[in-house]
Length: 144
Image (cartoon, rainbow, N blue to C red; front, side, top):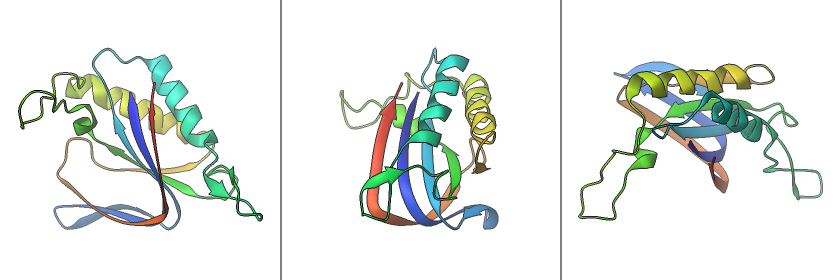
């Protein structure tokens, strides 16, 4: 399981021109599920996202989590995080989990995050358009 976690001031997600989700402040998290990933990994991923200290405290040091700053999370499924470009120019996605199993784990990460945070989601498998105002920019890639 891999996440690209970005600190944002604003993020909006639409599908077919319809607003699906938006957050005013917090984290945009792009989540890829690898073939063979487990529920235990989904739980560990949600704990890491919630606890990651990438927001600045009053001294300007990255010392606060999204929960500490009352931010929200926009969780976006993205199988392309497991695109392999090592052979040729067209990525292979054979390492990505099949959609049904990936969707279950994606939703489990969201469910676990919701235990302590406000979480909004994209539409699994949809052609999503994302407008985002990055803060910093701060981007962290985490793989478990």
